[in-house]
Image: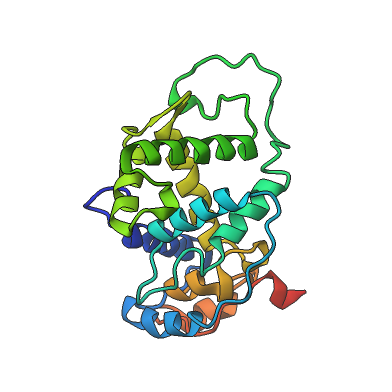
Length: 238
């Protein structure tokens, strides 16, 4: 959603590539090799997990949103198939969602966007209000809740939110979109132990090797070459 010059998938893929290069110094897998890895990652998804904090209506919105931001293609399964909606539900149900590290005693004055989060709401409350406002705007604009819109309309709706053109009562649609995009990217690229990046689909897509703390020997072996070892997550070392 970052604009026509940077398609959604290329933006997400590029973000992962940058993280790989910085973290490991190992050459990531070539793009043409991503499709076979994606095919392996597109196995039958497990049964849906019980929701921890999202309501069914909120969950339907999140699934539709992450699938619009991260559509299924030859590179990876869709956002929800990769567990991004599960990741968001878990995050909003825990310390992050409860604002454990936020100062919340005010005063809460209107401030410039570059000063960061300036609202009295914790992240769970912020997403609850944002989803409600997004669905209300969607009903006024398209006659349906966001998750019931066809794909093209969902893309147009998210672009309107990204540009701040969607009118949300009492809040900024751009601020909500940015928070939604951020947490979706985190869920897509996070360690699978947190619920997202199911079967390490995004790591396979970009050639990221995962958790090991040192790649000293591998850097020597794979310098300038494709790193062909399968990625490993926190659970692999438990």
